[in-house]
Image (cartoon, rainbow, N blue to C red):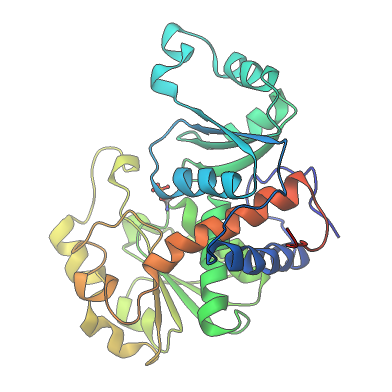
Length: 313
Ligand code: CP
């Protein structure tokens, strides 16, 4: 079993064995991230281009550290000071970066399908770092990793994803990954941000928060993505916060040891209260840290391959 040479455009269609392989290798990578010497020679001589056409803090930084901890060279392409500004096309930009000899391109883009299109244009592996409202596979992988780390398993857990589902690439990738690993997935949000057709993905759709949170093992709170909502956000901030905001009193309905996740960045006191995001149930900072280990696993397994990793330095 190997995912060597395979681009990662999303988690749709990614099988259980491949997900478990990535999570297993990420667990080993985390021992390195937690150690005094984070440097491994596993990608020595390889190079990775970070191409972020949309803003990012966590994903961009953790991909950069992941590649560097594995010994790769990193090219940080910055659209605003590139020849895109002079009219060079997206495809020619990709061909230029490819000509520089990179082995993999990590891409974020506001346009759904841009990483897939890139994969049709050039040879390096493409790792989707979030494309529009489509998918954000490595965010979902780090969410899966964090759930498994805290709960010990994923199979059979009730996972509730709350918020702006329709514009949520994180929601979509989480649904695919969680379903493949046997979780019971529930979605909840206002009708304007959650289409009932999402039920066709094998999830339960709710429009009442208290009903959705009943006996939840995990609550994954999503950001309200106003930048993708066109003419306006409906309901408005106050209505959303009172009906769907996750505050401490909302957790009463969930299991006593409920785990709180949020991919970040957070609109605090809109979708999540300060009492919850920095509270005892929250693993939000650990998610950020786990992003490095998971991305190390993805880079290693797609560029080098294999069904395990040897960390003997
Ligand atoms: N979760 C996430 O994708 O965060 P960034 O936009 O900061 O990368």
